[in-house]
Image 1: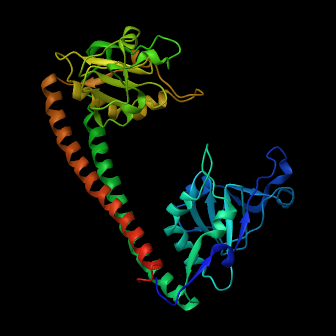
Image 2 (image 1 turned 60 degrees about the vertical axis):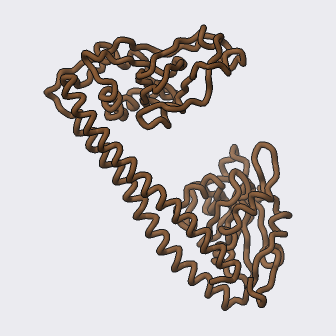
Image 3 (image 1 turned 90 degrees about the vertical axis):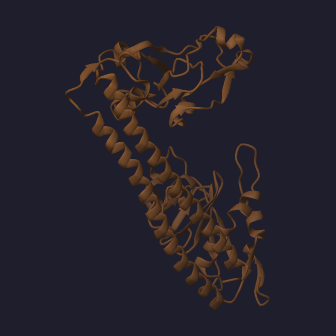
Length: 393
């Protein structure tokens, strides 16, 4: 840090304001004209400035709660669940108790403070305390030390950071767009493949050697004696994250677990029917799974396993739509009884799978490239901020 910079505590250069929540059951406290923001709202922000909020409180709600008015051009910081969301308000605003307002004095540039806090998220989290979730107290926040150059130097640094971050955000937008386009290209091709109306339509049961729900009959399901053995136990989350092939698992069954379940063979297609509807993956090993998953062992004389999995990927939206309308979205075996899917000859299925595999591999490579670019961009932002507050810009 430059020798002519001072070190100040945030409590010396900011007024720190707590938030609060009016009683939700009192209607006259709500739907007024005072902006009111929560950490959850802040997590949805895609820009530095907050101009509107989903919920508003009334003057009565403000007066009868611990919420306070925070003037424009202040910093809003979430201090629990999670610590570290940041925004600058363009209008008067209030917050719930999960946020604090930092009102800078006349010698502290708001944007300089914003960038400093952005650079200090890791530190702020380390100062949090609590068992259920961490919370950063106002007392500890006031003690955080901030490098404090002259007003002219603050504005110079902010100008540089604004320019750098504008360029970085454009690069990030381009990488995100390219990532989205690569995924959409595969999905578009996938949809096009299965729109062939000339193929014979069959139910999944007609193309299967085995087709049924998994088993987990013992209650309670979390009985410790069921777990910790050599038999992989697949759950809906494992399938959702598989990416075509299920190659890892988070739990395993013991002999007791296997006895109340069923071991499905390698090559089984797993289809989730609860929680995460219509997620699919192919087992890379023998495994058990609960009744929230359907297993399908394809008949090789009629259906190629990889073709069926790709087919189900393309019908994912259709199957998900059938599961809506209940308290917890789900589908069941009956959903598939009358649902007919297009099946060409096995040789044509294999040809299609080769093309889809090649495109999927190319898509995966592109996702890796753009994913790394996004990671590099985040590291660049951190690096620039570190240099800024070390006096190296």
